[in-house]
Length: 269
Length: 289
Image (cartoon, rainbow over all chains, first blue to last red; front, side):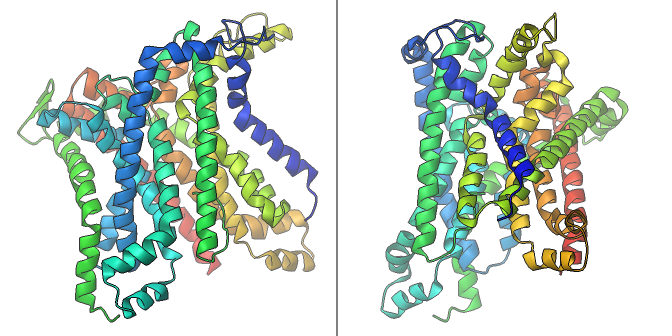
């Protein structure tokens, strides 16, 4: 490899720019001053205590977990159907159907939220966590489909044929051969959808009827300077949580590639 | 296993039907509803016949609507240009100057910030550039400024800064992928034929990586043009972009037809720009063969 000191220092500088706001999280989450300002005062765990004693925050976190788990489960299942069908079978209308499924990737989220909201209001459906879930599933499913499509594609089809030749039914083959081989892809899709849903703001805000949901709650709290330090503590916890989840997803993805004998070719996207 | 095409088609359709039905009912139908609402008359929270194009006429004749659309377009295109230009050298460095086995690690480092809460990242900028924020404190204690700058109140520049940061990691990956595909022997050939490294880059590497640059532009452009949170948080909420405006029309004024027409026009605008990017991309793919 050629040395490129200028490019390398630029890249490190760029990383610093990317991480700059995030680095502030732990710095001020443990800082005993009420205002976010240098120089730092003393070390404290008060903000974490305040965060854990905040009842509304607890409700919001619980709601967000319910939403994210439901959304991740539904989109992963829908993703398995769509990815398996598109990789394995040819059928009429495949391109428009897949196009519609992937459409939310190229559609501003606000438009999805508003279109759904207009219909729900016209039909008189009350807004609830349930409406947030059905809305978010639209946004996360394309990600599940993308990850699962590459998982199904790397599958060796002769293994399935061998199982069928040995007398397994189509469902038996899928359950015993295909599913275990794409399991890492399924786990990765689930984790990615979970993360996206947990962070999602627009649909949670507009389809949620004002119920406390974590992202919406955080957004509201940042307006009050007195609340900022405990929000930074919360941010610190969430960042650690995301990194652990992502590390796990990446590990699963790599294991999947190793299992099917492929070569590692980059990240999630 | 010799499945006939017809039974294959049936199995395929059956398999995709749960997902297909879901998106038809919850995505296609709502989008169609918006389209229908946009050509109807309306009052508060209701719509009525007859079919009319008045809503679109109003959009075109009222400067306030066009202003929001143009402003959002301008902000999104600036953010796109900034993120792509800043990301290119990073993608280039990782692709050309990092050892193969270390590449995933670098990419992982670049993508982590993207997976951490968007709301928190954006809100943190408020702590940095807001009134008496960290930036003001730093500039004042260094004696560069005597009064708070309060950059967050600068509206559009502040919005562009925050969005450019929020979507930065999106741009690196597609450019990296296209750079990885560049045949390294072409570069050697260029240099063997007496071109300097810089000219080789301009004439070989850059054109070959354009599909990645364009993909990156699209990936950044689409979410930024519809961003809701940033304009609400910085610029004191005085610089609404498309998403904020749709909220006002549909939820606050409850003018369903007018709001729908605005949503349709913004969708068209996004589609036109995206198709423009894709057509631009065709030029480069055509040259590659």
